[in-house]
Amino acid sequence: MPAMHDFATWEPLLRILRADGARTPAAPGSHLAGRIGRRGWVRVPGRPRRGRADRAEFDAVERVLRALAEAEAGDVSFKAEISPTGATALHLLEPGPAVEPGSATVHPGALLLVEGAIPEPWRRLPDPTPGAAPSPSADPALLERTLCARVPGARGAAEAEIAAAEKRLGVTLPGELKALHRVAAAGRRGRGDDEAAERLDRAVGCELLPLERMYVARAPTRPCGWRSAARQVVVTPPGAAVQGLVGSPGWIVFAVGGGGDPIAVDLTPGPGGALGQIVLLDHEQVIGAELLADSLTDLVVNGRREGRRDRRWDRPPPGAGTDLASLTNPRAAVDPRLEVLTTGGWQGAPLSLVPVMGLPRLRTLTASPGTLADPLEIARLTALEFLELGPQDWRVLLEAGAVPPGLAAAAIEVHRDQDPLPVAELANEILALRDRPPITRTVLHGDLGPA
Image (cartoon, rainbow, N blue to C red; front, side, top):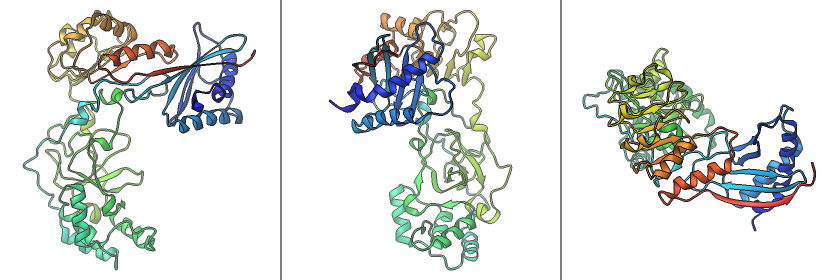
């Protein structure tokens, strides 16, 4: 039996949790639970105020982490039922490949009902911009002369190396990017050319990537869990320089900024942009990019200028995404552009979904417990691909056989301190509708002795 299923592996951690639980005011029906794995660990009830983790806790957590690594397991949620005599039943919940990890909680994240399905914003491709042209500032010859003057004696890449990069990337590199690498090939660090590489980075204004490390920033390069991604709305307003996309086959990442953010040549600009403009993909955003310069020549010759931010893509158009908690009249949400609807903290009478039935683009619904008048109305929202509900509303749909057949992913909204076992059982019922791998449950028995 693997060590992760040995009660002795968990015993030191359980003793610490029991001691912490004794120091924490217990709510009715409270339990000792947590989640542990490569992304750290969380506990329920929350940690008492007693300073940083002590050595005993560190060792106890490391003991479990080693066992998980040995078993090649990911994050594991657990619940401990400890009697006054110390007799203990430890329930281990392993999520499996069809369950995304939850965020700072012991409960499962999104349930993946279709193998390989990705949220609509991550499937969005660039709009065609047939009139796009390079900026007047784009000048490969000027760029080459400027770099030669700033980095004299630099070694450039051979034509065969540039051709190999184009073949790997599946795209023809723009003239300015070719000129940059012909003059000075990046990535010589560790080969005795550290000083030359640093001079080149200073000459361009960012840290250049070698040809073999350049990549195309398609949507998968900006991963995001279903629960958050399904709420995103992408848009490119008229006149925007940068298209509001998660990723694009025309974003060729050739450098990184001071904070490690990718910098790309943009071959799929917005209606107000220029072919070959330079954009930065902010790591704190999952949609759009920030305009840095009109061209690579502009970036090198003039530097990154202030006031170039074009962030209209992170403000969804009216009607595309609506939180009913912000409205006084729910009917204001009825709009043919509506893609994402959430009831949030709606405080009024339970809502009917009849007004939004038939909206062609409504793909995401998240409804907090108690905010829907009739959960069965959800079955008539035929375009849904993601649905998040409380346990009671899910129970209504399951018992009526009314879960929308077109769902690609789902989620259960629960409070952080709810018992994880019934939540896992409900998740498995939803997964079973599509024959998806369930959350597996293992029960270990042991004795911690009296507290």
